[in-house]
Image (cartoon, rainbow, N blue to C red; front, side):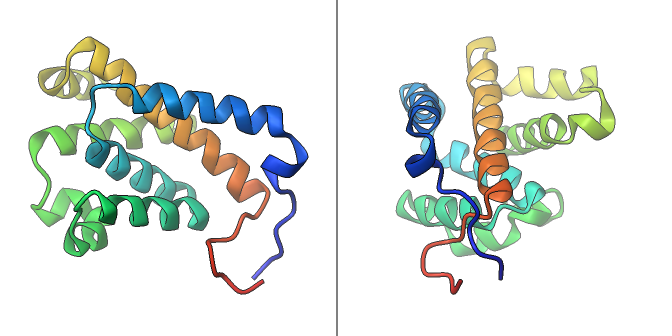
Length: 151
């Protein structure tokens, strides 16, 4: 396991504060914490961010999320455990996270999301994806380790 390169809060508190302001904006939104945690975990899985996966699994459990759904999140399409709203949110999160590879978010996906969420909720959902992708890039780039991980 690699040693952490940079500790964001210690080395650039203004950036950490800006990122936390974004999180406070999300916390004031209308989407459920459970849905946001699923999105944050799925994006973190795609980005290979162990630090964020660990943190958001713990938060999801605190919010009552089941271990079974957490274990099957990576295979959410096949699992049959996620409702239409969650599936739309996860598909949206994946499309935006993989944008560099696809360079498109198809109308069919947008229409699926719009059938489940208001325009304001789509903005909030998108901001959730933006925020966790930002955190993932800091944590992966700086090699942040999950709590209790051996260095």
